[in-house]
Amino acid sequence: MTGTTAFWYASRATGIVALLLLTAVLVLGLLITRRGKLPGLPRFAVTGLHRNLSLLAVAFVAVHVLTAVLDTYVHIPLLSAVVPFASGYERLWLGLGAISLDLMLAMIITSLVRGHLNRVLWRAIHLLAYVSWPVALAHSIGSSKDLQHGPMLDMAIGCMVIVSLAVIWRLASAARQVPRAGRVADVMARHDTATRYTATRYGRTREEARR
Amino acid sequence: MTAVTAEDRTARTDPRTPGLPRLLPRTPEDLRAHLARHGRLPYRGHPGLLIGDVKAAGLTGRGGAAFPTYRKLAVVAQARGRPVAIANGAESEPASHKDALLLRTAPHLVLDGLQLAAEAVGAAEARLYLHRGASHEVLRALAERAAAGTDRLEVTVAEAPPRFLAGQETALVSRIDGGPALPRFGLPRVSERGVGGAPTLVQNVETLAHIALIARYGPRWFRAAGTAAEPGTMLATVYRPDGQCTVFEAAIGTPLRDMLPDLAGTQALLAGGFHGTWLAAPRAAQLTLDNETLRRHGASLGAGVLAALPPDRCGLGEAARVARYLAAESAGQCGPCFNGLPRIAAAMAELAGPKPRSRTRQDAERWAALVTGRGACHHPDGTVQFVRSALTVFAPELDAHQRGRCSASNRRPFLPLPDGMPATEEDWV
Image (cartoon, rainbow over all chains, first blue to last red; front, side):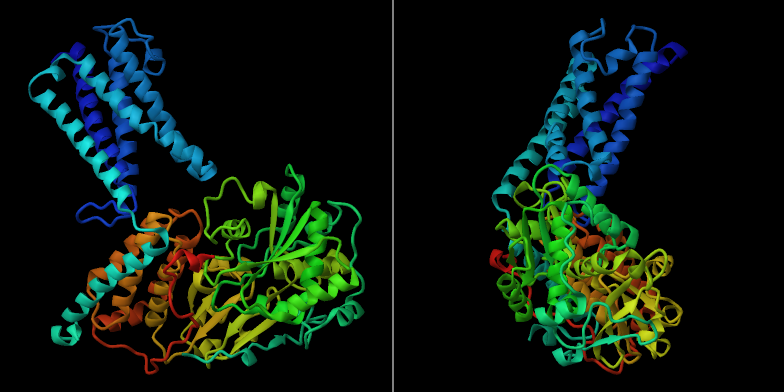
């Protein structure tokens, strides 16, 4: 690796990590329903993980874009990072990247100032994730020859499968949602069972607890 | 269950402050007695004119948030459309009785305030939002006023369900619009788009009663009691360590010891109610009844509930009971709230019992941090404030529980809590 190729490699590497992170962010976002749960993580912590990973993904995307611009092998104007189809090189695929980045920025900025926004507006903008991620994936596969075969292609397909499964889960969970008024009672009953189980280990015998 | 009967909720005032009581008469006043004491309603004749007086008086909202009243009035007055003015008498905190007492003994002061505030913002409608089975005194007062023709705007009564969040501003708007009393996200603000999309003024009934007095006697009179930063008097529901409950009208800035003489000998003070803060008793005994002082110790007045926990009760047990109640009262709309609060409540129940696991405390703290700021309304934040301060103040008790001991000799519950929890949509209507 020489000085001239360092930016290129950095751009490729951060691009792939960014794709994996964005996939994770999208899946976590899909899991944030009232029933979403990851093993070992409280339900409501999924939100925090989603938020932190999305900020990390943006950092990777930023490095990915900057290193691509700084790389001198092909000329990519900085403007083309945010203005779609402004690059002479790989006009279509880099244009998709710019679209995806713009949508991402809209989501990040509205989320950072969510407290000052109309809730409906925030949600409408956040739904752009379902456009942004497929566009980013198309950008990745289209602009990178080695993502079109071998283990890298398997990885891209793996991302698509995981996202599809998460979408199916989301739609299915929407179908079996507990009515609002019963939700708290539902959750409390679950925790009461857990508390009773704890009580059997600390103090009472199992027989007493069963009665 | 601690007996807190209606007879216990007697009005007391500090005799050392001259001119008190301002709000609470000794016995319920009818319209004739009210007019004999305070004179006719000083309508200003034009919207906006009263707002300057309210600003000069420095009145803050007495429903719990202590927001400057004039700013709310000004925003609603300037918003587009004909506003709706609402007196919020749905005192939803089970431990607070000050609004109920005010509506029973001085209903006309509240209704005067509603008329004057409605005039100040140029309201086209006036509503009175009350819990089912609210005192008949206020309904009789409305009839008296209709017969005497004192009111320029007719007041319609709306009913609040017996839910902790029913008095929350956005829940109130939803209920008055015919829906369930559920909070929604804060924007657009109720002051810009509330009932029926109209700009809506929601004021606590005590705030309105103060407005009625400011309109009559002026800002200077109002500032004769209280501190420079927080002028006036306030109503406080005080639980003495013997379980007796009294509503005080006190000048803001009054030493807490004056209302709770045996405070130093108690275990801890709960300031601000169930969304409030536990304070260690020796520290609380040095404090005064104002937000300026309390905020320095991480607490606030809220809607004015002060409860001194006697030394023979288990603070963790009390905190666990309240945490469970608050979890059950989650509206079930925001995931972090209705998944997180029951989990925190279950952790508190374990900590209140014998030999809790050592990691449960860290879990409760961690979960508390995760739900903070993640709700449409203040409910998760307020609940976490209560739980965290309990874990801090009752830390020695927690150590004892981990060794399998509890210092409490009296197992009877201290803080008042209603029975049952909401189960159907009907419970929110």
